[in-house]
Each structure stands twice: as structure tokens, then as C-alpha cells.
Image (cartoon, rainbow over the protein chains, first blue to last red):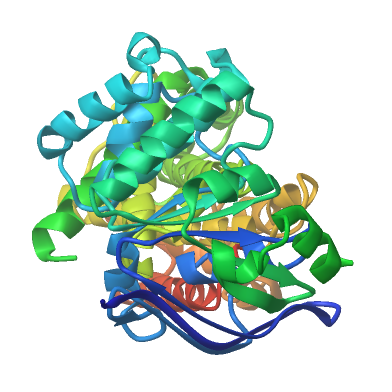
Length: 238
Length: 257
């Protein structure tokens, strides 16, 4: 199996000397569904943001789909899709146009993007809202729009930063179904979550991160070691 | 990204921004036109009729190139400043930062949309001057080139301001304390030859003087400074500003934590 993501000795210290990541090593294989668990401020979002090019690392090496983000950053980015924690699309632009514009940023023309846009609008139940602006969408619809936007250029690697935060149970289950299908189609998925149940339902491997360090990593069974995940999580993050 | 992908990415940003300008035409185009037409009316017609000719042309004709330049400069600066600051404010800039577009392409695409706006504003205002007086155009192609270059320079300054700005207040500092005084003292309403020698020398340190005079030369065929010097100063300014912007993108200053 090839590594979809390989991280070596990753460090990040923000201004004010706040240490967010401290020597993270991680390998994620192609086609994996992987979860990062950890409390707020553990370093999950920082790790994702560095890999996507939103935050500067202090030290370390990151390779995405065989491309070093320092020397072949643009090639690496072609493979990555990101669903951020906060809604960040232009609130004055129509849903459909948000997707076409995002495709354009990746060099995909409107004509080429059309089948993918239509599929995503259909699958994520946004077809009726295609001519609405995000200001007219509910929280759940905005979350689905973020997922659609992240997939419009057909990435092979998807980051989901707390995808189900603030999402109702029904939508969460729909989202899980969609993500499973996506993973089965070959997309490597890494998500961060506070919901242990989400990780248990979706992921084969997980990592528990706290204070900028990976405290435990492995298959679900390896991490649990025969105990409930919640118990292990609380013990590690205490 | 290959060349075709880069072209698509360029057209995406350019098209999006031009569309936005037309969507917000009441903010983008109308204020500059109204303000400049008022200048034409008050300074050109009412006061200008009492002033003797400068360089063989009426005062109204003399101030038209400077006022067109002023509108182009301010519009290019403000449009780039506001569009980029709001990209940061809304965090929409993350869409661009995670994309595979190289920094120069992002800058060039936004710059092109601002230059397009600048050309449009310049044309509309220059056209409106004909409501008051027929203005001769000595070097039309040079005039277009000067608008493109000056618009580029001010758009880059707007971008730099937007990147450094942390609050809404920071958006106004450069314009209020630097650009507006330099613009009004940049020879729009007068020839620097009318000033005492010491002030003539001081004026040469004002980069806007070269921009106003380059456009005045291209329209009226005369200026206080040679066109070669003017173009060199403008091109030098663009080179410095573009390098600065690329550096900011590369280091992520103001955009990345």
C-alpha cells in the first residue's frame, strides 16, 4: 500500500510561543478512513491546516500523494479537498457558482465540472438551492455545501475538520452514508471529531492527539485494548 | 497546473471579480464619476473660466488628465483593498490558499480585474469630460498603457494594504495619510512650474507627479516631466510592489498563521 499522507517530525509554534504540534509522525495509507480524536486545542486543525497550506509549519516534512508540500506544494494541493470547521464561502455568491468557481481554481472548466457539480448537488440534496446564496441556507445545508465544494475537483484525499459539529442526527447519518460511499470509491478520508461514536462507526484507524502530540495510534481495536473508547480517550486526554 | 489549467483559473478569478464589480456598480463606478464630474464643473468650468490658459490649453482641458488619473488611482486602490480585505475577513481567502494556483497567478488575476475596472472608470470619466469641452488626444495608445500601468501600481498598493490590515480602521490609514495628500499635491490642478523652485524640487519626490504627468503627456502632448522618466518611475514602482506582494504571499504574512 502507498502512503497517501506521510508526516515526519512536524512542529508548529504560533506567535506568543504557543506550541501547537510537537514532533508529530504519521503515515496514512491510500484508501484509509482515518480519524483524529482530541480535545479543543490539541492540534488537530493545525495539522490539517499545515498540510493544506493554510498555516506555516515551524519544522518537519509532509508528503501528500508522493508530493512534498515544500517543493511540490501546488501538485500536492491538486489532490487535496478540505471541509473546514467554519463556513468560509462567499455569502453573496449562488450555491452553484460557488462550486463552479472552486472548480476553476483547480483549472477545471465550467463544462468539465458540470457532471461533478450536478452529481454533488443531487447527492447532497442541494439541487433545489442551487440558485440561492449561502445566506439563505440552513446550518446543515451550509455544511453540505462545504462538502460539495471540497469534492468538486475530484480530490483523492479529503480532510474533514469536525464535519458533524452542530449537525442534527438525521443529517449526520446521511453524511456518514455519503462519506462511506466516497471512501469506498477510493478517496482517502481523514476527519477530526469530538464524537467518539463517529470515529467508531466510520474509521478503521484512529489517533488520539493531545497537547500537540499523538498519544496513541492504531486500529480501533488496538487503541481500545478491549476497553470502551471513551474510557481510553478520557485517560489519555486527562 | 498546466498552461490551460492556469488560464481557466485566471479566467475564474477575473470573471468573478468583474461580475462582482458590475453587480455592485453603484459602489464601484458611480461615486468616482459623480465626484470627477463635479470637479470638472466647479474647477474646470466655474473657476477655470477665470484662469488663463496653461501650456496653451484652457484650465478645464489642463485638469482633465489629472482628474482621470486621480479616479483611476483611487478606484484601483480601493477596489483591490476592499475585495482582498473582505476575502480575509470572510476567510474566503482559504479557498484560494488551498488551491494549486501559484501566488503570481492569484496576484495577476486580481490585478487584471482591477486594471479592467481602472480602464473602464478612466474611459467613462474621460468621456464625461467631453460634456464640458472637446479634449484632444495626442497619444491614444500611450494613454491606455499609462492607465494600465498606474492602475496596476495602485491595485498592488491596495493589495499590500489589505494584507497588512488587521482591522477596518487599518484600511483607511494609507489612503487618508499618504495617498490623498500626495494625490492632491501631485500636479493634478497645477503645473509644478508655477511653484517656487524649492517646492518644485520637493514635488519630484512625489511618485504621483510622474503618473499624472505621464497621462497629461499622452493626452495633451506636454508635461512637466519627460515621458521616459515618468514611465521608468511607474515601472520601477510596479516592480517593487509586485515583488513585495509575492513575498507576502510566499511567507503567508497576514494570511497564514
